[in-house]
Structure formats: C-alpha cells, structure tokens
Image (cartoon, rainbow, N blue to C red):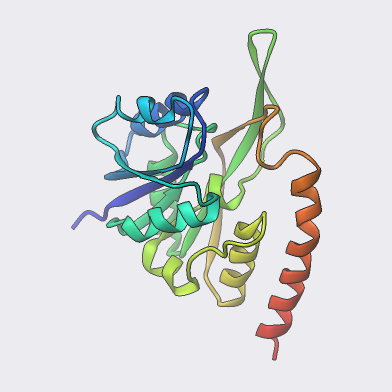
Length: 217
C-alpha cells in the first residue's frame, strides 16, 4: 500500500513569490498527495493566487502567526508523511522522491536534505554554498513520529529549533541527504532577518537549555 505525503504551508501576505513556491511542489516527480495551505489572514492578493489552484486544500483564518498556522495545517493532514515549505521558497523536483527513498532505505524517522540560499541580483539568480536544511525547509517525517514529539510551540521566533532538539532527545532517528533539494529565497522581508528575530533567539536559547535539563533529569 502506497503511503501518502502531505505538504503543509503557512502564508501571510505572500503574493510576490507564492505561485513559484506552489508550482515547485506541484512539479514533484513523486507528487504530494495533499497540499494544505493555511492563509494566515493575508490582506494582499494571496487568496486570489490560492484560488487559481483548485487542487490545494486552503484554509483562511484570522492572523494567528506562523506556528499556530502550521499546527493547524498539520492537524488537517491525512498523509502518512509530512513535508513543509515556506511561501517564498522552492523545491527541487525530486525532493519528495529522494527523501522518501532515503527514509525507507535507512529506516529512519525523519530525513533532511541540503539547501541553498538564493537571491535575484540584476535579474539573475545567485546561489550560496549548500548547507544542511532547516526544519521547515528540509524536513520529511512520518506524521506519527511528528505527533509523538507534538505540535510546534507558538510563543517563540524559532520554535522549529526547539521541536528538533526535543525530537532528538526523544530518540527519533534522523538521516541526511547530501543533495541540494530545497532553496531558500533571501529578500528584505524574510521572517528570519532583522533585530526582532535576533533578539528573540535569546529566549529560544534559554528554552533549549531548559529542555535539555528537563530531559536529563
């Protein structure tokens, strides 16, 4: 029996790059069986773009933030596996196929790929060196294992870091592909740019330390 893949995205005012992100998911050589997009109270043309794709499962909510939106999408997922993509990023066409094979061959609980940052410079795409994927951009995981760890927290700027440490402490087996399968777009309005995000990382660091102490008791 073939297992289903659910891709989850949360988007807030993402009209500029949203269609490209969706198209990169739809272009997968091993298609996602379900693509869930939580429209987090967007006030631009995001919903108009989403309405162009009847194959998506779209839920529009009042603005509640990234982590609550992702959790909502996860709660709607019916797939055996979960993947995540930001509304301004892109996937390689073989991401689903290679990570599914990777997990099955190595019998691991979650697979990560490499990613590259990219930006448009003078009308051309410029890439950085590859790096190991972040939680949202590179993660491919069995839903049952994700739920064993639990939903993302909702109060800090980098809840994915906290979730990943908890997954490790709980013994989830991780494996890493050397292939670049995800591309993170760099632009002026990235969530992870600016002093507000950097200031929030102090609270994330405190929570990571608290979590380690809790599991080491």
